[in-house]
Amino acid sequence: MRIVPRLGAALVLFGGLLAGIASCSFRSGADVTVIEFWGLGREGEVVAELVPEFERLNPGIRVEVQQIPWTAAHEKLLTAHVGESLPDLAQMGNTWIPEFHLVGALENLSSRMDASDIVVQSDYFQGIWDTNLIGNDPFGIPWYVDTRVLFYRKDILQEAGFDHPPRTWSEWMRMCERLKANSDRESFYPLLLPTNEWPQPVVLALQTEAPFVSEDANAQFHDPRFLEAFDFYLEFFRRGHAPVISGSQIANLYQQFGEGEFAMFITGPWNVGELRRRLPEHLQSSWTTAPMPAPDGEPYPGASLAGGSSLVLFRGSENPDAAWKFIEFLSEPAQQARFYKLTGDLPARKSAWDVPVLAEDQEIQAFRTQLENTVALPRIPEWERIATMIFEEGELAARGRFTTEQAADRLDSRVDEVLVKRRWVMTQ
Image (cartoon, rainbow, N blue to C red; front, top):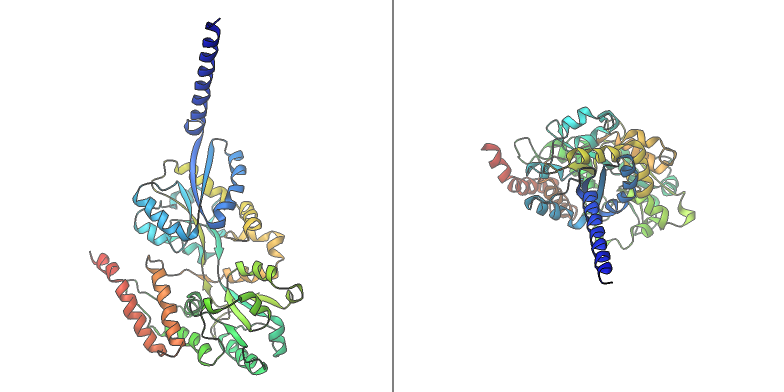
């Protein structure tokens, strides 16, 4: 009578062991490869919705997604690199690629690109593609893209006699003059340029092909091309066309735009959705977007910055082939279009823009036009510090503390100090 329970318990234990062995085999056995992907911000959350389809198509691969807040991502990635605990692959802001390449964290994707029928370079916007290159080699594959265009109030421009957005710098300045003269509101400004944001002066400098930093790592802010663009930027403040305020001093961007306190501002694609959500229905036909005006004599549109996130493969990955399959999957035009519908992030692949939800969206099409003329930011690890210095000196100059030349002096001095170590490394 006592033998049976013992036998039963033994059978249960044996069964449990078999289940455990089977489970262990499923997680890490030869039949299933588990890869780890770190996604940043909301994209890290939404990408999980694409994983089941990838796993259905690749039954031998399972993807574990870890979502990381953007605010913690840079430090976490660097810490993981030092601790040799990076995942197989990750999403990465494309301005971070030079830094992670420098520390030896990224795999050169040239040979995988050459062998791939899915990741086709000609289907990517050139300026965005360039952000992933170190020399001529790709160390990331663009996932979604970002740039800056002009948002403007059509009704306010029409009241001042303009039926189109500015296409050149001189037309832009003339338009601001007339908009200001046409308004009887003291608080009205034709253009909003928050002084704590670097993209606006940097975009203008990209349009004049300012180099920012030379190949031997010396600051180039006295280059005539930078001086021309920086002076044009400061002229909006000098003439009273833009208020000298930072983003933190703007109480409610959308409400103030809706109330007509300013007629134009430069921003990214996320604000298309925000304006559609936040402005009342009767104002929805009053605003739209346009590519950036160009310097006089240049083809329209003028250049804008090449931003966005890329997919990178880490050198320490134990499963690089499976991780590359996931990069290829996320790079397929159909998946890019689906990702846009889930997140609003603009596709990096040109062919993904053919879907009606993008092709028939007038405000989004301005970004499509602009993406054909984007320029990669300087591909150096110190770029984000340098960009901060540009708006800091720009703010002081906008407040009248310095002339354009004096601000350029200060930028040369501060940036050269930042680049001392880089120059030393280059001479060794």
